[in-house]
Length: 119
Image 1 (spheres, rainbow, N blue to C red):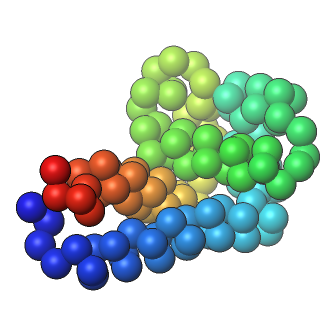
Image 2 (image 1 turned 60 degrees about the vertical axis):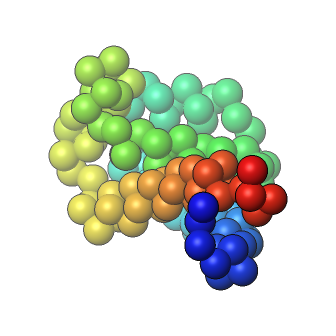
């Protein structure tokens, strides 16, 4: 169904390693910067209070920010994202974070569709 499974399995294996590594590196270096840019948003304030400063929590907070930036209209409509914060968020950072989210969703979907057992 998915063609040459060797290449697909290699791609999915590398993606399973790269996604957490990128979240780990970005959460250690850029989480404070990104949270400062979205400091008026209720979603960010609640996540900062609810989750501690451990590595896993920082990665979870960054992934939730990626989700927030991937679907901004929904979060603005629900009142969880401040529209001024979103408008003043730098476009390259927004695109990079949204791309990281969409790529991880694509990889998870590909893992569900491409069953290596063939059935």
